[in-house]
Length: 179
Length: 241
Image (cartoon, rainbow over all chains, first blue to last red):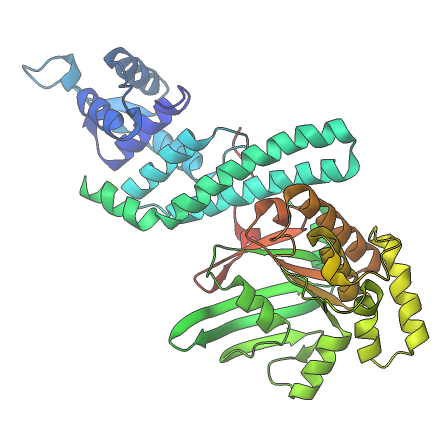
């Protein structure tokens, strides 16, 4: 499952595709991002309530005869802007970003956005951070070098994932479109 | 965010440029409209997956390959339409080369190999060997001048190759996977020397690598994909926190 900070943004991304009910959002979230750890219903509705309170989504009337989970939600302009900003800006390079990057790539492909450009921007941010760490190694002592090495090797692992994912974008886009 | 080095490099003169360069080998396209600029004193990393065209682009920039379409410029001179003799002269006098495997002459000594470009430029033998010897300590090769290069370790051989590439004080050093055959620590030593010496000498460097750790030594990097250059300078690198 994605880090909790990403859940609201991922739900916004799913709503960017089309207005949806809480139940359908949970189903799509679990299919793409849950990976065996489904999002609890309670968290879905709590997140949607917070997003509605902050003006990022708007909840419609529950459909007659249906339970509370049949209430439709749509993304607002504010929510759409926040999602776009999150999707297009690289994340601060640090180890273990794969899950967030993964959700960005899938959402971008789902919405027909330029996933390759986002990955290129993320790669550039990673190499920029690696450049800073390399400079620390060039000018610092042995302890600085060891710490910088730790960061460099982890960033390199992220970059490998970015490169392999870039090479698989066409196949991934087909899979996301067909599912 | 751009580094001060990068900003100052951009302000300086354009030294090497490819404009919409195309090249195929048989029916296989290697470059498909690649464009690239390198300013004087800049250290540029050219990255890309295997088969992306990054080495072919380096060979075009260095006048080794001639593109089928497009233009290659060096220091205000159009390289791709020059006579072979002038291009050969430029490769001998203005360009230095380091490849993945040093391509040294194994039967010759370290000093012979380093002096070779100077001798080919018709320097006097004594002067050439004096200059070659002066490079040995700069590359941590003290005492190895008389050793045959076939007897050297990979890291030592690459340092000799670096000395040979820089001894004639070229304007541009073209390095193609210079650490590709070395282990991590030896590769770091070679890169530290390469970057340090290039900065001391004011040499521009075009560095082809698939390795992000090597690219991180450069002022700037570009990505080659499917024979075209993706200019990272245009990409958003501010990050969300």
